[in-house]
Length: 449
Image (cartoon, rainbow, N blue to C red; front, side):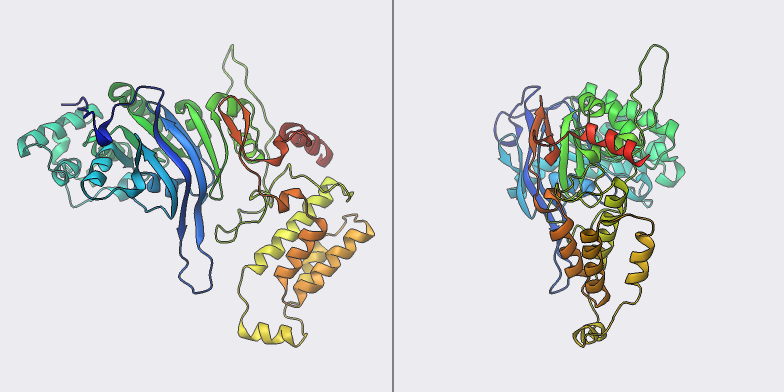
């Protein structure tokens, strides 16, 4: 029943193992906010990487970083705002009509929540057969037989054909979702956190199933996850995403052993270390990031990770302890967050009259800087920013601190640079004039201790 038939023309041009199957180049996906003067949400912002035939690329990052949007845009479920997705020399984002339908046969998705992605009004047989019906594949009898074959391949029984999704466990429902994704015999699967909603023991069985199917059917995976333990097990290469951008890529083993971006290092520090006899384990101190990611509607103008970065480059002309720098950064983040909220008419009028619109900013500043030793010039800058914020000008206050106490990380958006064989990283610390990420994290950890 299985065994892909390939045409030698158009979309079905054969690709040898090791060649690029999907190439993503400067891809953007923006969502309009709906307001006349509001900036769009930059869910995916200038992403580029390749996926080779037969490999698994792991895409990781915090919730909200744009992973799922990237996956959906790659296979055409969401329209790209700008940029390119190419497969076998064909621009996927330009496809329409029969060509688009052929691409949809080649590229499928397995969703995160098997309960939400399956229609409880349909039997399992109807759910798995639906793509075959939609693409008018074969006769009704051959479709039915193919569904039975699919169910068997994913570890389900023939009698499951007649049951409904609510009669299954979470792991079984995800097997149904995988069978549905395989119905059209695709080459490329986007796996959108396919194990997140499952128990740990069930996760392992689904991961093993996906690996078996990949070997048997010569599948290519984009595996989206926030669990780096899963990625370490299944992925050949890893792509790390933060606030709509790719910050690091490389072979999984190399990235896990020696992360070159501070965000990657912070993610890996949260992975539990498992020791087994005869094996060495890499132990890392937990890196706790301050605050939350900025809004994708208004990302920082320099490095997008600068507001939370534990290895941020400090300006040479300002001498502060690590603790003092951390508090200054937290105060800047607070002011920046305040500046995101639009002023009401009353606040605008009050500010123009020169009256205080926020009596709490001085209290907040006093609490944050209590016990922190600041040089006179730095304390003067903090006081001036507080005065601006107290009169409703939080944005000016944030920009004032950025100009006076900011660093190159706040002003220059780093580009992706080579940091080794098949490795790319988007961090200014990869440049020769700066200490590398690992050295800085070790030093600052000791200073804070």
